[in-house]
Amino acid sequence: MQIKDIVKKVKQIEIRTRKKTEAALMGQYHSAFKGQGMTFSEVRPYQFGDEIRRIDWNKTARFREPFVKVMEEERELTMMILVDISASMDYGTKTQLKREYVAEIAASLGFSAAGNNDKVGLILFADKVYKVIPPQKGRKHILSIISNILTADYVPAESKIDKALEYMMGIFKRKSLVFLFSDFEDEYDSKMLRVASKKHQLLGMRIYDEKDNEIPDVGYTLLYDVETGKQIWANTSSARWRYTFAEAQKQKLRALEEDFSNSSASFMNINTGSDYSKLLYSYFQKK
Image 1 (cartoon, helix red, strand yellow):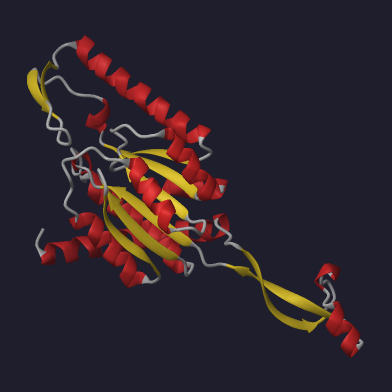
Image 2: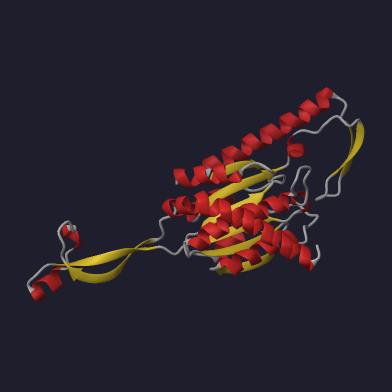
């Protein structure tokens, strides 16, 4: 894309997502993710209705009148967005490529975090980690993240989700909110999901195009795997062949959902072009 096209695309995404974010997601985000705990703010005179357990007994004894400790939520959180940039994510048969759809969802999440003064970081990965943008705050930073997702060089290689999670856990020791975007077409180690979800709050988001699950009848055709380079001829006119393919995809999805469930991690299966805001709203409510 030309620079002017990138700027235009980023602005379009910002306009679309800001409306959704401000209307629904930001408040639910704040309610769902409470922060890391409580921290001391100040001491003030006791007021009717204050909890007795908040009384500062040292100051109360010194001034011979009750004082209470005021605590406030330690609000700041870190959100990490992990995006699969293997070649299968640079694909789409509807109105958006997967990468464009991911950029839009990431924008909604990022603006929700920025509106609550949280930091957001980005990791782009495929067979290895290709780029890391450290967590920062603010609108300009979120726009930079959107731009990087849109303009990344999508790699003709199998994605290694394990390596991305392992890398993130090696760098970010503090518990973070982790949103993992991929089409999950490649193999992964389910043990790494369990390790990651114990340390962080993990949501896997499978982004798929409708043609990922079902191939239409287009006769004999050459199917090409953009990640491995493998090619096969298939008779898509065969109802049996199409059924076998669709069933295999369903089984893969069931296994994926089971792996995330067994790992105590959350999971979403999202079709490009669908209204992701409703799914995120529901996720935030459950949290």
